[in-house]
Image (cartoon, rainbow, N blue to C red; front, side):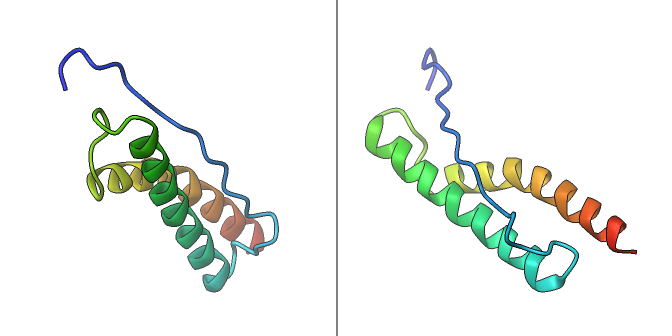
Length: 82
């Protein structure tokens, strides 16, 4: 895809209703991140069908990037619970 500008879309994942210090809360946030990444990639593919990597590489990259932020939130919650 030489010469194709980078495309991105922002999805916000809410976790205000989750207790990230618990295993179930952390797992639910991770699920929400993966679901949002899949939806974002599907939306990009629909908007730009000839320029976006197909799933699963798009979703895997999006999940990896977003999970870094989710992991920080989970770690902060676990630290605060101790």
